[in-house]
Image 1 (spheres, rainbow, N blue to C red):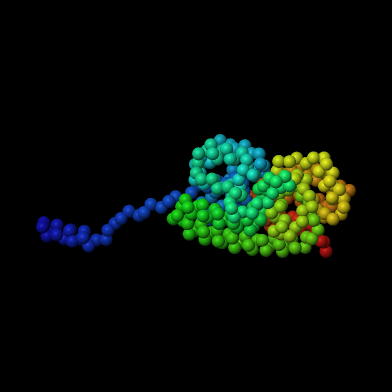
Image 2: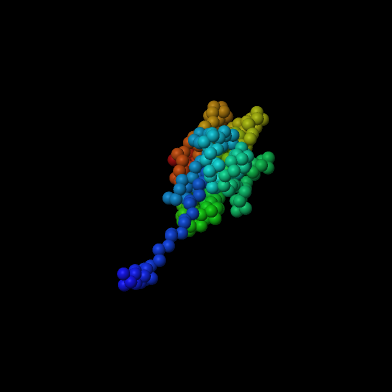
Length: 293
């Protein structure tokens, strides 16, 4: 027996120590406001997770009513990524009341160049510039890395890949829209970031801002602009009644273009949405406004 105890003691002394594996942080639960932001967040998360999105297909983000299940998702979120109160003012109070995780309003990030409407209010449609989208992927990666250091390298690597793809997407869109030289008009003044990035000139919009219904004087002015013959096409807003746009172009040299969907209300959700959004806008504009033949 003493010899057996001696052998056991020797075995224990020479055996490798077995220690518990260090606990790994869970991937943060992410909720986003609108589909373009969800798409960018999905690019950064990659295979680690799928961000939720609050505003559903076909819904107006400016005036949206959350369902009780969405309030539950917000309260359980570790990180709420949204454009900011400039796009979804109703979300400010909801995020505070939900008592969930951190809030990441992208438009207020100091690296984001903010364009303003004619009345001085910030234009929230900054995602329509892929260069700004690239900035936002980096901001999202750092926010995720701060919450989940174990996967920080993955978030940053995913963001770097996304940024390279966004740079290529800008070049692709510029090539599609290069033939468009004449001004265009749109249904909604949402293209203040998109137009300069892709070399477009916007001569007017049916709705001048997110909170403004067009007045009679403004519509008369827009119709006069269309009648001058310098604006090639008027593009209605996706999801809006096209009859107003049809009436405005009737009897003018301007053509009626396809409805544009700057908020991606009609595009399937997911990581591929952002590229589909930019390509779709470029193709629709070029189809009407590029010289034929």
